[in-house]
Amino acid sequence: MAHSHSHSHSHSHNDLKGRNLLISIFLNILITASQVVGGLVSGSLALLSDALHNFSDVLSLVVSYIANKLTKKEASLHRTFGYKRAEILAAFVNAATLIIVAILLIIEAGKRFQNPEEIKSGLVIWLSILGIVANGLSVLLLKKDATNNINMRSAYLHLLTDMMASVAVLIGGLLMKFYQLFWVDSLLTFLIAVYLIWMGYDLLKTSTKMLMLFTPAHINLEEVVLTINQLPKVKKLHHVHIWNLSDNELHLEAHLDLNDDVSITEFDAILQKIEAVLHEKYDINHVTIQPEYNKNDPKEVIVQD
Image 1 (cartoon, rainbow, N blue to C red):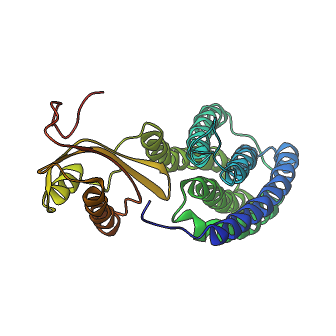
Image 2 (cartoon, helix red, strand yellow; image 1 turned 60 degrees about the vertical axis):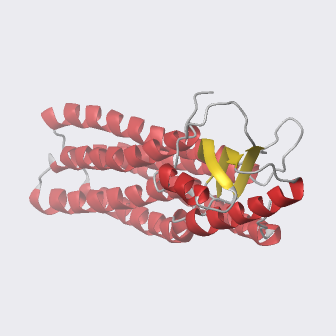
């Protein structure tokens, strides 16, 4: 390949991501245990729903941590891509669990709304504050990596939604303490669940597209082909596939019909130019091209294999 990457920097950054995930796992285990006990003692469904969400956070963070560790493993004869897609799979699992947990919360909130119960609001208030502080710290730890890594983004979203859920539970606890509005507990549970579905759906959709090797949303495939076709000695780029192997690896595979019967040395020069253009304009960093001259095969941009 024409483009190099700094492996030492990548490994040290992965170690930092792993450490931050580990800290977040321990913080969420603490919150979950506290909220389960507090929810059972106080009778608060919102607090128990927040605990359930926190438990899903623990599971999702463990999945993200394992995926982060797997990506460090090198490729082998039996795993030629290594475990680079592990983080995409982790994001898919995390998004799916987020939505499943939300649906369970909606069902339970509906039952409780019809039969509101008196709740020990003081305990709810203090435990929701604990949730806000611990989840807030976890959110800060993962925020930087969430912008450029789908696995870290899935973990970050779990923690961000849980921090917001704890804020909602705190508001509900205050309303119950001072105004005895115990039905607010069920309403907050429902609102938390709807928000989880809204956040989880987008991540589920993105990770599914990546797993299915769909063309990334920001890539205009026809524009890519037109750009390459305008280069010297190029007749037509066809049989094109563009996909994300991982968050930071964007691949292009295609057949290249040439105007002339060029030598291998000449083709290497053409290929270097193509790689440079694709990397500069579209951030495509892995290019595999099959050169052709007067070959009798389909010349459409997309060919059904």
